[in-house]
Amino acid sequence: MKILISNDDGYQAPGIVALHDALKSLADVEVVAPEQNNSAKSNALTLHSPLYVHRAANGFRYVNGTPADCVHIALTGLLGYRPDLVVSGINNGANMGDDTIYSGTVGAAMEGYLFGIPALAFSQVDKGWSELQAAAETARGIVQQMLAHLSSGGAPWLLNVNIPNRPLDQLKPVRICRLGRRHVAEPVITQQSPRGETMYWIGGAGPAKDDAEGTDFHAAAQGHVAMTPLKVDLSDHDRMVYWAQTATQLWRGGGDRA
Ligand code: MN
Image (tube, helix red, strand yellow):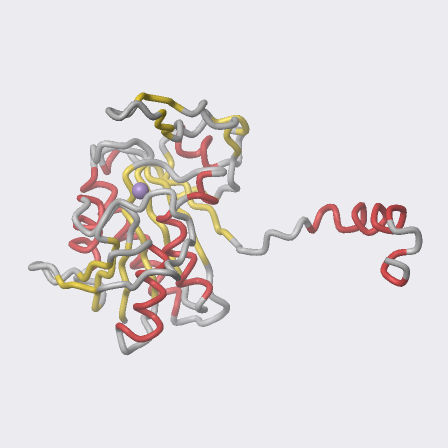
């Protein structure tokens, strides 16, 4: 079995070092990760500047690009083989609810998934790397189970996992969840630059808005490892009929007269 590891916090982040250490006895693992912190870069690809790959002393390869760049170039030429699994993380902080839209951790995993490879994204709920070893052990257990599950074949999958910062013996079992929702983000923060210009800093994500039972927020708050199966289709399937009726009214007869 071959595993490609990436992240969005950069190749030197404690989370990816711990993840690599935890997974290297399970499979052949290779790290291709961003040189710099690329949190909140989602699935962005770098199209208008060249990408360079370097190898660090510990064997990790790092790229002057985004998480999705890393996985993309790994899968389209750099590795020279097709990994069985793409694993991203462990992220410094939660990726729950709407975070998944922005997350580079999820973006790296999603890039693998878009190439038809099963993928997992791991995040610790709280920033600061407390109980990182427990999170890495948890990730190892999940990857081990999912590698065994791979042999049964089937369509690729994309799993988003958030691990509470707790010692192993205080972590509750994996719970399958839907995504919750957050409030709108905090206001933008402004400062004066030394040259007198106004600088704008993107504010933090809002608190949980929908953290009802069944959500990732709820499960993680209870101490469970929160696992959400994701898909990429953004179509609003629930309102297809509504929009078809609305379109009929708006364009008086639909496509034939639009
Ligand atoms: Mn990050």
